[in-house]
Length: 407
Image 1 (cartoon, rainbow, N blue to C red):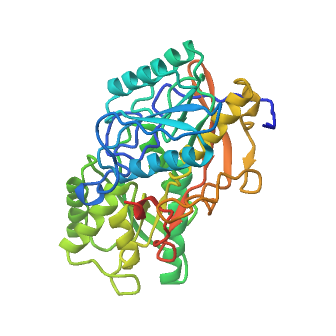
Image 2 (image 1 turned 90 degrees about the vertical axis):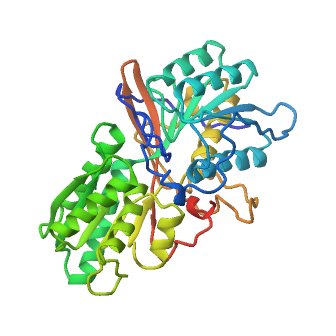
Image 3 (image 1 turned 60 degrees about the vertical axis):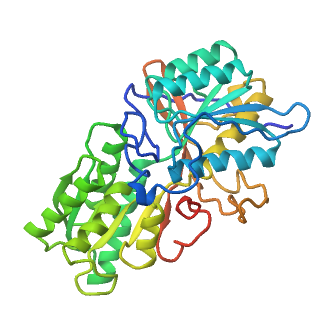
């Protein structure tokens, strides 16, 4: 196969966790509740909580890739993430073995060791914990097995490429969408805004806060009047929002930085008698990150204005495509995109044209454009394939490629 070679500018990463996961675990190194939700938004094909294996028959010489996913356990976000890997492996004639880390770092590391013993050619993983995953990478590399990451990454430069969307960019987009909705209501971007705040103890949560605040600072007549930090349970978020409504219900918009806070907003509005659809007097413009099944229903019914979501069906295909290129090139890092480059849908396609569960999951390049950036860690730099986010509104809430519609 012909491979384009480029000079690699390796990326860097901090010792803290770089967390972009869509799971309900609150460990460092994951999204701490971005897409797990309570039971009402956690149905769907998450798969068994036991280690599971899926193999697809490829042609002679096809690669065997191990997928050490951080966890399944009924989490629809992770179920969609897994499906993307399995469908792409099937289409490309790759052998794929999937293990379920059950959101436990020690188990995930043991899963990776088993994959190494199975003589996989490469490992794709979404680490539960960034620092702990360094062991996984080192032990695989000792056997000449490269480890690529998606959704969350390991804190080492020895990962050739990491794939995920940008939390700060997504939060900034949420601010822009909110400002546009307020302008539609009042003729100019103005109003009083309440921000739900995740604990500022992981990089992900900081980015989901700072991106929104910096976006709001662009509008002189929009004021953030309150920031409600919650403990990453839906009940606490609902209580904090209800208390704010009881104390001061004179605000125009609410920002929800993850799935749980978005779900909590709907129950709090209903409990306080202020749940009004878009266009009605008293509607509170609500914009957030992450769109699970219940959030999509709220968007369809005009209660939730918009959500910025992750194109997680693309995470594994993007990463696996570059894994194959990397292996074909004899583990030559020149096949990894250059830092500073923008990759568009014209530059790269991951679609196969095949149907899975009645849809062509990659026909619409939701990931594009992607920015190639770098993450800094103690031992050097790591290349970050940063995809775009997906703005979900009533107009596209029924799109079959959204993970919340696969649940």
